[in-house]
Each structure stands twice: as structure tokens, then as C-alpha cells.
Image (cartoon, rainbow over all chains, first blue to last red; front, side):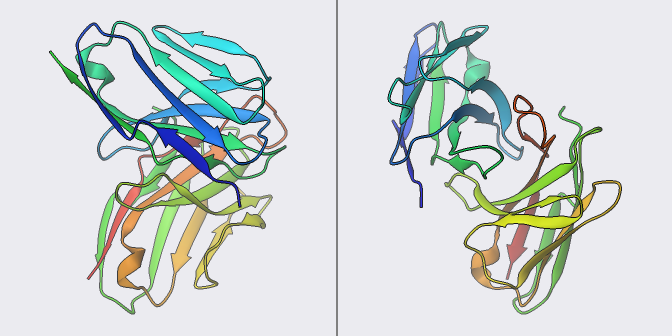
Length: 111
Length: 114
């Protein structure tokens, strides 16, 4: 089955720094999603990508759908303490097929 | 808030028991998916329900079963609980026929099997 490799596994950064994380797949996806999960909560959708090469922003967050359709990255600019959490990438092969998730990137922001 | 609500929020069960978890989907959403998230892992797809029928299943044994009701709410049932079933169970709702309506998750039910 499809597997997603998400990196890095964890990051410790200073407040104000930019952050970059990425996700690669063994299969071609037609949808890439990025979620953030806080402790004790369900994942919250940050950005959805539907076309190869697509670059989408949501405030300080920017994500891109890789040209090969097998990768995606998420950037966070000027990090703040509330950015702390676990970020998951997720992808879908086609249509309404199930989402496949990465193992997450745990982000810690040092004030 | 996504509008997807799950109950209960926490549950402790004994090995061998049965459990039922509940999910109310976001208004207007007709598709419900269930995921299992073990500690330190990403969510793993269990199954999806659309129009009250199972519509896709992940690599989970038959003792994991579900239902969807006419109002699109859903239940996840797990029989013969095992210690490894301890996890956060997430429900996500979506509108199947819309390409750009993605899955919105509830807050999850934390199941502990002892």
C-alpha cells in the first residue's frame, strides 16, 4: 500500500524562525493535505492542494504540490509559540479514496 | 470547530469487552470515515460509510465494524478488545460528491484497553 515519509520527525526552533517540512510518497497522489494536531484534539486542516505544481498560502503557511505528484512541502514563516503541535501530511490517490497520513512532524517553538 | 462531534471523549475498557463509539458529522456532509491513531503515529484508515453502506475498508479485522444512520451520524463498534486497540479513534466527515470538500475531523475518542 501507499506509504508517506514525512521529515523531519521533530524540530526545535526559535520564535521568529522559518520552518520547512516535507512529505514523499511511493505512489502518485492527486491530492495533498496538511493538518495540524494539538494534544487531545483531532487534526485540523491547514491547506489542501489539488494540482501538481500548485502553491497555496494560508497566512504564514505555504504549501506546494510537487511536480512529480509524489511529494509536498509545508513552510511556516516567522514562527510563533502557538505554532507548536504535530503537523501531518496526508495524500489521496484518486477520487474519494482514503487518506494516507505521514507519521507527523512535531514542532516545538522556543520563545 | 469543525462541527464533527464524537462521544465519549475518553473510555477505559477491559480486554475482551466490546465498545461502541459515536460520531455526528458536520451539517451537510454525507460521508463518514473512521481512523485509528496510535500514540506517536499518524491516523490509519479503518473504513468509510456513504449512504449507510461501507464504502472502503483499511487493513483492520472484521471485529471492527460500523454503521451509518439516515442522518449521516455513525458508530464504530469493536468486539473482543485487545490491548493494541488502545488508541485515539477519529471520525471525519466530508461531502462525497464535492472534490474540494475535504475531511474534517472530530476531537476523537481516547480508548484505553486494560
